[in-house]
Length: 365
Ligand SMILES: Cc1ncc(COP(=O)(O)O)c(C=O)c1O
Image (cartoon, rainbow, N blue to C red; front, side):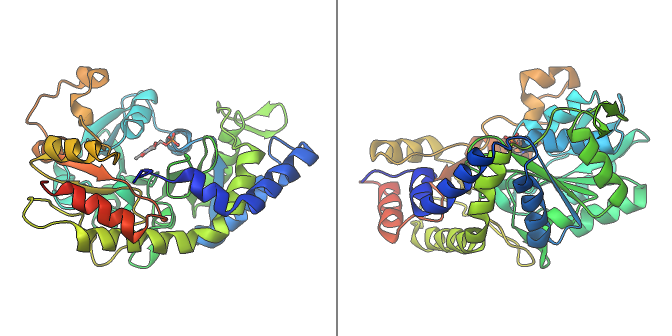
């Protein structure tokens, strides 16, 4: 049996007619930049998330940049974030010439530990940037209470969690600004790079709309230094075709996760993913931790089952952040996670027999 990690081709074949006609409609209009599909998609994303404003952009990375530019983050400002995430979270902070200040994670959710945030706040702290890792929102009430107390902004890096909820609300609607990614392998993916920012704040929304097109409000009149950060009309069309299927796909991902939880063998010392009761995950990844990672990876590889490690090196130990002078032991929970996590194939279309095959091959033969 050949297992496909994300089944993107399979998904395309399922929705081929809708996706092809959406793409052809754009080709026939040749409205490649800021076509009406972009606007339509933004209205659909607002309806989906209940955020007041959705502004689509060129990637999840650019979404983070737009958020920080809109909040006027300055060189030397500090932004508190997690060391256990994809590089873009802290990389964009550094690109703004601000300083990423890492705070360790919780061992069960792998998300930032709010009980450790206050100790990291200094007079230079301007924002907290939690990540909804693997598709599960972090402890947003606790994070927002700390932010309110210290007059900080909250930028949610929800690149992996579009559609996830926290106490019944989309995490896209819960930050001062929330960001997401539509990278193809994300739960809601387009066919290239894409992302979005969300906010309930009218002024921030207007500013981000301008920042996305070189800071211009009116053509060739530039109020801000911005970026070329638009989402292509073609990508908007793909997303518009896929969005009507997305709620169902989230449910299917949740069922796949449940099946994994039921089928994976006991006795291998696997720590299965833990989703807190007051929130939902969109299962960008099904990631578990184990002291026997190499062994299990090898077993699965022999059976042709792909796995991935999200992420093998925490950000405080990355070469690009050497200037922050961190060392091994600074964030022990993130370091342990980096040594022990392994992601199994995850997509809405995994069948029971594929899941059985994966579970069986984890066992010693
Ligand atoms: C947590 C996190 N932040 C940011 C990004 C950046 O998104 P993109 O690849 O769309 O630029 C990603 C995904 O790749 C991510 O997983």
